Image 1 (cartoon, rainbow, N blue to C red):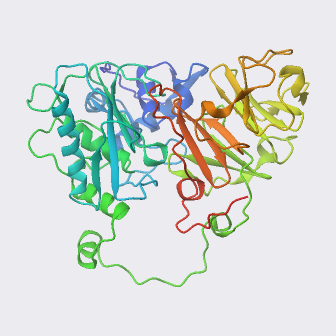
Image 2: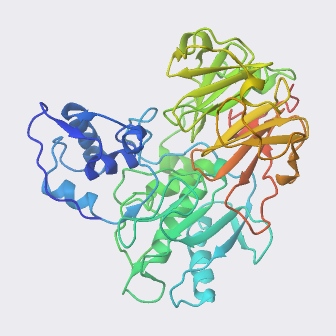
Image 3: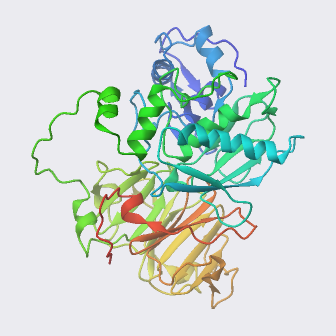
Length: 490
């Protein structure tokens, strides 16, 4: 990826949203994600753009000017990891090692190579390269990594090109080399098959170095702004000593191991004595109660935020889990909407649809559209009252009730279902229980998520090879970060 030189000397003009530079800053978390969406209109103010450039420069340890100087442009043109550096809405900080928040709750982690590179590299060399990359992490944490030739694995690895079923398409040689998902999103790692990967010679991109970095994400570490960190986002082409920096060692050991006192003191300084406190976590009731409030619905809003409704309140969920500081009243965001919604989704028109009983509401932003609420049967005549959940994927809409689902391809009066009046069995999603509480299609544009009680199930919508068996996990542990949760849930 190459950018032409642009020096921004003032903040009086506006920059088109379609600018490749704006897209770059949005892709990696320095500008809002809506900048790169097809529905995004208008211009970015020069002030906002300059701040984004400053944040990028600060993260990369460049001279912080807010203008696109030669050094900044050059770094933006350098091959790198496709994972965001920061979260625009929640994470404006720069700091050293960053634990994303989720981790594997076991010491033996399995991985499978689902698709090998098309280049003429022996499969054995690829497997050995990945085993070596995992080994770099296991030297410093109580973890072991086991390769599986077939069947379900914790981490799936694939070499793919261009658009490949998630929201992070590859861009050909250079640019975005690879990306990986954090543990709460499965830990999978994707490598751009357009790259000239190499494991034995210096003529190409060093697969082991890139893999060590990506597997750091798979283990729960985000990007670091420490230049010597293996978790720094920019590819350096190091072939001699692929090893963790002190920053990486701190991160993985804090995340996965209980360190001896002398090692902990050496790395972090002497531990202060704990002070007595009565402070409770934001999710104390959810974590400790046998009968906490239940999740009513989960959906992506028009800005791609994951929203969780519980009674009269809602929360936002980031890649780190539910944000404890995001709790707000539903009525403040969506006036006239009733409590205890059954289901919701945001459709391709950018509008959000809420369902309760026999009615549904349509909102554009905070505004209820004229003529709503409407009868569900006027638009979706075969769907039963009080659906359990609803989710949209592209133009398709799925409604769930008991052990069945109904599928539609538009929101129009007198709509005809694509699955028959009596619906179809949810066996399409193996292992999914009846009467789910909520469902949504992930920001990765890859996975369906279903919630019931204290569990969620993740299904890869692009998987056609029989590895799709639900990936069941605890909502309390993975989303609300409960350390010792009471596992009953309404």
